[in-house]
Length: 301
Image 1 (tube, rainbow, N blue to C red):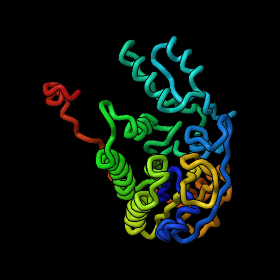
Image 2: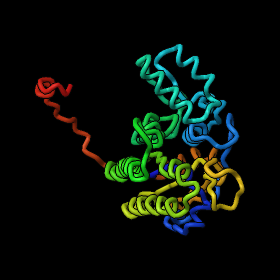
Image 3: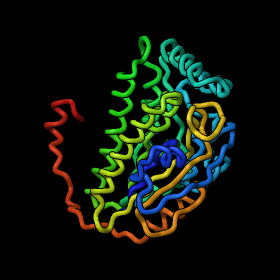
Image 4: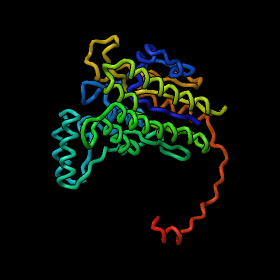
C-alpha cells in the first residue's frame, strides 16, 4: 500500500537547516505550489488540489470561503469577513456561536479525489474529509479562557499529532492500497515559534521521529510519500519576508523508486500510478455479529 502523509508547512529549507535526514526518505525534492485568492499559499486551496488534481477554480474551495454556517444569514455575512485576520474572524465566530447557537464547518469539495474507491481511506484532509479536525488545531492558539501557555499549547498540538500519526500507523494493518492523512503540526508551530528557532527545531525533531517510526513499519510491498502544501517563513531563514507567513518552499519525499513529481498539481497522477502497482492483501470479509438488542438497551444505537 501507499501511505501519504500531508505534512502541512514542511519546508525544504528548514529540513536542510535542522538536518533531519529522516524527512528526506529515499528521495526528496522541492515542489512548486501556488497562491490563488490570497497572496501566499493557503491550506484550504492547495490540499484539495493535491487530492483532486484540480485548481481552486475547479474544485471550488478558495480562500474567500473558509467556513460554512448552519445559519444561512451568518453564512452570507461570513463571506464579507474573509479578509479579516484569523483571530478577528475567530472572535466574531465565537460570538455568533454563543448568540445564535449556530455552528460553522470547513467546506469540502464535491469533486472526485484520489482517496475515493475501494480499499482507499483518508483522514483529516482539508477540503476533502473530516475537515473539522483542522479547526481543532486552529483552536490550540485560541483557548476558551485566558492566555495559552507553552505547556498547554504543546500538550494539545502534540496530542492531536499523535492521534493522526497513530491512525496512519494502524492503517498499515488493514490490507489497503492507499491511506492519506493530513497533519497540521508544523504549520501551527511555525506560526507560534516563528521567532524561536530552538522550539521549532524540537517540533521538527518530533515530526521526524513519527515519520521514521512509520517508515520502520512499512512492509516489503508498502511505500511512503510525505509532502507539503507550502513552507513557512521564520526569523532565521534565508528570506526577509515577515516571519509566520507561508513560503513557496514546499517539498515531497518518498521511499518509492518512481521519480517524484515537481508540482502539487501533479501529485494525484503520481499517487495513482504508484497505487496501481499495489494489490489488496486478503482479509476476513465476514460480517460483524452486532448484538443490536443489547446495544439499543444501553443506548449505544
